[in-house]
Length: 142
Image (cartoon, rainbow, N blue to C red; front, side):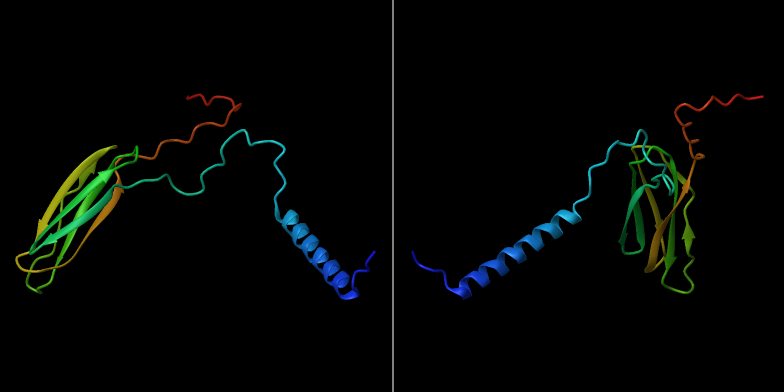
C-alpha cells in the first residue's frame, strides 16, 4: 500500500471545507416556503392604472396625436401645441374622451414651426369604489 503525500491530504481537506461552506451559504439564502397562501390580494397602494397611451407626430406646422386607451376607465385628453415664433399663437385642443379600448386622434397646428407638443390626461369619470372586504357586513343607505 502506498501512502498519500501530506501536501495532497491538506489540499483535499481545504477543498472539502470551501465546498461545504459555499453550499451552506447557498442553503441559508433560500427563503423558507410559506405555510399558507394569502386569502386575498394585497391592497393597492397607488392609484389604479389609468391613461391612454399617446404618440405625437409633427409634420411641418401640423401636429397629430394618436391615443389608445387600454384601461377600463375613460380618459379625457387634450393636445397642447407650443409654436416656435413669438408671434405665433400657442393652442390647446378641446377635451376629447377616449373610452375603454377606444382610439382617438387629435390635431393642432402653428402658422410656422412647432416648438413642442404634449398631451395631458384627466379622468372623465370618478374612480370606482373599492370592493368591500370578504366577510364584512353590507353597508346600507339611509
